[in-house]
Amino acid sequence: MRISDLKQKEVINICDCKRLGYVGDVDFDMDTGCLLAIIVPGPGCFCGFLVREKEYIIPFCDICQVGRDIILVKVDLEKAEEKCKI
Image (tube, rainbow, N blue to C red; front, side, top):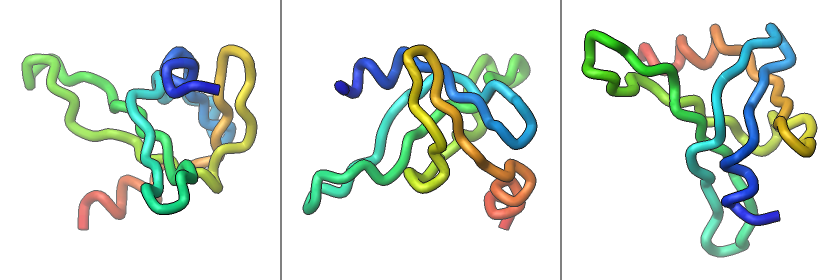
């Protein structure tokens, strides 16, 4: 699978069935070549001139399944947002 194939897949959180968006980027370990995380841009903010305030960095271990059209992940968004506030 190519990175361009991943970017066409929608990411859905199975904890709350929320659509997080589409894969925007990936994080690789340069030494091993292993995929560390996928990065999904957060929702745009109209007041901020459509600038994205946050992004979801989803570790590889939280990816449940990669399908033909979607990627299922298991992420507790409340805990992830608490980490961002610190």
